[in-house]
Length: 395
Image (cartoon, rainbow, N blue to C red; front, side, top):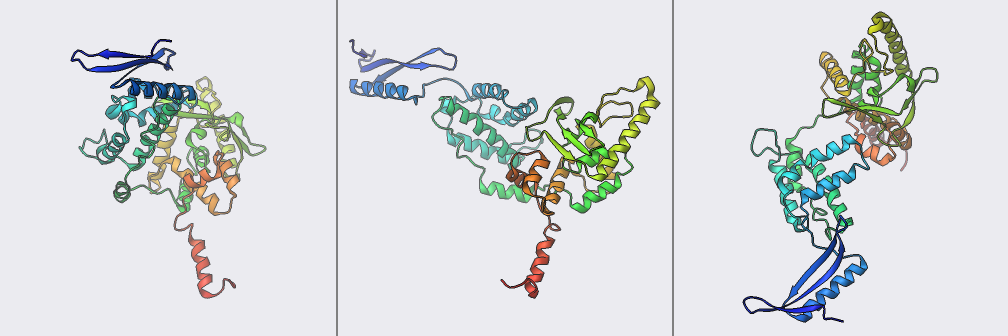
């Protein structure tokens, strides 16, 4: 058997020892050969032995020249198998800063320090459209960017392109989180009283019924995707199987429920049931009045000639109603927080709360959507009154 290590003499007379070894195949199935050059034959043989051992154990990380940008492109293509087109768009937007600032770096050369510096810089001066140099990017936005980057790099580890993820332990600094919390005012979701005021204010609105559905925990895309065939006015139930969401702020995308848990049947509260019955009757009158000019699309949220309305139009309708009724302007989606908080505070079991929201995990529902306000905590203050006055019973 021939010697796997060859003695070579460089032009300057230096003697080195070189070995070539098969390291498997790359992502495209192309054969990878590594050329190892060392100062001594012993070192070359040791390195050869290490590579053979790791290749046999399946732990070998073969050198490659893939940049982070190239890997992110591959990862996004891979993710299209698992997530909706709207989610892919969100991922791409989240990774814009990564492409801009780190995309040129070789994947195998990317370090934790580079990722940490990138995150720190994003927090301090990451806004791209503010027009003001040094504008801070919200910590929640940076966390979202970091989450996507971690996921992409984690996949690179699985594919044995890198040994470990350089983003695994990167975090936004605590000091930056405190500054963000102090400087960035986040509008609180409506209180129960504000939701009730809004309901009263929209009673005469043509879209009272769909707006009311938005105020019982349904997502705007679920409301706009609702079809009359999914509503049983006799049994007072509403089946959630279809959504109409938007890509950006202009293209409507119709699809099924986001998850299996999102496909659910909800009992209709009496007020919502009555509102839907009135809307159904009104649409019948509008169809009769419009004659051939009416398009029967089958959707619940339509205009006077039957054409479906999208989430942006529903949101703008809600904003006008908020303004005219003197209420704080909040996202229609944020009303979901208020409604689910109300259910939780009023004793609805966690499993029912999650099922109503269309989630598989009750813990997620409570963590993400249940945000008790000061009035929600009033019962605890009353309990302390009883305790302090001695009316709470023996401990």
